[in-house]
Length: 233
Image (cartoon, rainbow, N blue to C red; front, side):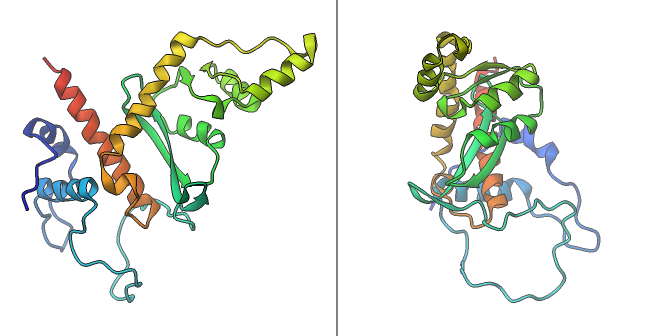
């Protein structure tokens, strides 16, 4: 079966400098990096296995992995029961172009609002405005974002509006909301729609949360590079 490449030569020219150089001390040299990454991307796109798999634990033998900074793996592997069944929830922060800035994965039953500050803290740059849906319309969230001097464009929930009006003048003024700015929230929806083109991500074929998150980041990198090169004159 023919595999269509995920990386053009221009895309790979930007990624290649990030690849490790040389081989491990006393070990074998690295395989061709481009072939390896292409294989990983093909597996993400098609959700097909590149070799025999097993759900049985492998016997412990040899030395443990020598990774310098392995990402911690949660005990639940970011899997949990929600209305959709056995799922994982991805909390993403994207920029105005719909490109990933930071990402947190949690079990499917986890709420969105408690993770908002986590993705903001992981952003590589200062966040100046948050545009989000009603799931993030909690007074504590608005208070914290105001404390951080982050502008907020989040609509009120109907129950919050009803409680505020029931209090009359003691309910205070409604939070500022610009519907024109809120229209830009669709970029995060479009981001997830594009990510779902990678079948192994849309249906989660990875057991470990750190591997699943890595696949999300890699797929997001491919999307970002394609957009950047498309816009390059």
